[in-house]
Length: 249
Image 1 (cartoon, rainbow, N blue to C red):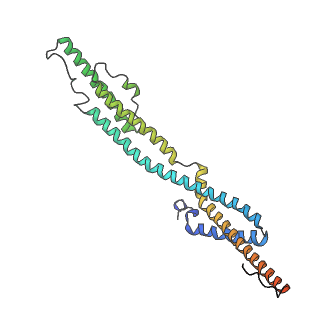
Image 2: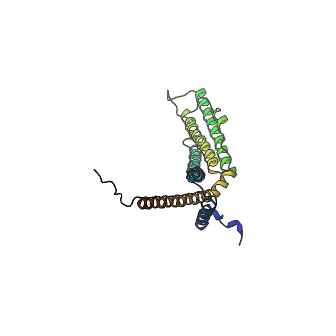
């Protein structure tokens, strides 16, 4: 069976549980039975296991960031595609892209005015054709849409509302493009982050095993204290057998 498709062992519940039990047993043998840590030493152990647990929390934060970034990236890509489709529809529309310019003023126009309006209308059509070419290239070659220089060449005297509509859509496109770039960066993990992501569960399991060994040591020390108190009480009773315990006033 190819090993490339096997999950890494830190993703197994049994592996993490095994690390926890092994850490508990090893810390019990080394720190309690062999090193015989005292109260002060065990209090210092808190710094160790809490620091290890913090590393595990950091790995959880990385995974949460990656998951949210991937979800938002899917949404932004859909929005990005919708903006391109709507912009294409606006440009290719005969009523918007290459419709005759709305005239105002007298009903009868001079031949010079008619020629000027006709020329402006043709320039406007040519401008929208260039925008459409860039849109088609963006879709076919999957490249970034660039209209900044073309927006500045809109023919003077043409309907500005049409130009403004395309410009607003392009600004929205740029915002989503920047958002996608940022989310793609956030959804990627560096080599060190990948290492911590795999080691995070193991580090937390080891930290908890160390904490359980500390609990075991504290229980044993408390038992020793209780036994010492009991022995001291028995010894005092033997020394003063007739002494009555003080009565409450």
